[in-house]
Image (cartoon, rainbow, N blue to C red):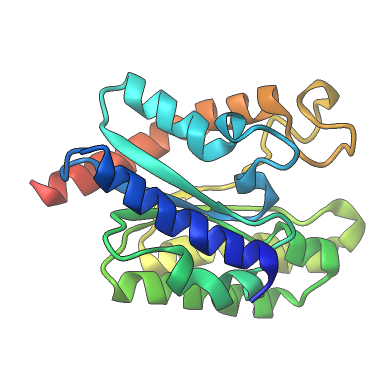
Amino acid sequence: MSFKAALLHFAVILTGILTGATGVSAQNLQLVGFGDSLMAGYQLPQEDALPAQLQRKLAEKGHELSITNAGVSGDTTSGGLSRVDWSVPDGTDGVILELGANDALRGVPPDQTERNLEQIIRQLKARGIPVFLVGMMAPPNMGDDYGQKFNAIYPRLAEKHQLPLYPFIMEGVITERSLLLEDGMHPNTKGLDLISTRMLPLVETWVKTIEGNQN
């Protein structure tokens, strides 16, 4: 286990301990944002990361929940598969799954990416944990053939496993320089604010479904 992965493991456990210690209602949903740097909030304060922004926006809509940030910068679907069991603790009510960007950047064969994602989904479903799938698109420099195969992964998995899908996490952001960090790849705080705002309607519908199933 890498140092960063071990640190994340400790943080996930600590979050659960602190949640219990502060007397948060057992009825509050415990969600996990599971992904790579786009979930982790690369180079940003944790309060600006996607899980925190979604949590605040959902709270404004009246939903009592917490979203633990289990994003690891640089993670691939293979890395996610290797850590999903311990990154998503028992008692988790739902997972926002966002992985695949680094697979595409590294030219990982799309069928391998799809197998990894599907195994993550199956493992979560076997534990009774609902999944919200966040899609990615291959960068244009990977070529048309690679792009067509990669981009089809997320809609196919969403249909096969009956999952809600936000098709492309960087929609409306990747082409706007003012919404990106200096590297031109990762969203800044404003970019993540736009992403969370665009994701919110679909995520809230998913959350309502989880809430309804618990009542």
